[in-house]
Image (cartoon, rainbow, N blue to C red):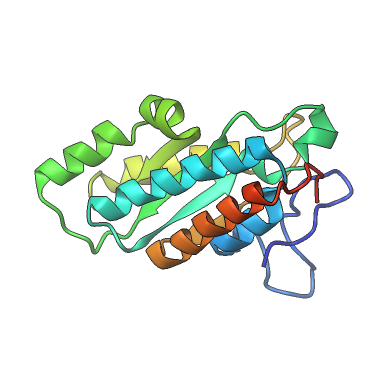
Length: 189
């Protein structure tokens, strides 16, 4: 479940001090489309994110998740008077998945930060515990978590955790197209 924005227009870091619900909040890509696909610009970014995720499935990855944060999950249209430029994503792949060196190189080459931003509109970071030394993986996770969970004024904000699911991604893609065809109004949540 994606919680409502805080009074500051960001995802909260915790829903309530009385619960264990905290950031990153687990959700599906369908839920993200329903919540954040309210403008054609955002829907285009979501289409890129779906293509980005599809590339992982094509390479044989089925276990993992994307941590989504940054201005895409904020009410940045109201906060900053502009739409988000991209979707900030940390990819975490399960270390139990073993793949040949060629697949690892293809993953790194085709889904690197610059290439992913250009091809998919995704500002991507990758943490693959099985492919890298533990200290490097931990450093990447720490840096990216900081980037994804702080606003421009260094205030804490939440993020979303989206597990891999090719079938739900297809459902999200169909929902995006139906929203575009219906001319969904560009009104923020």
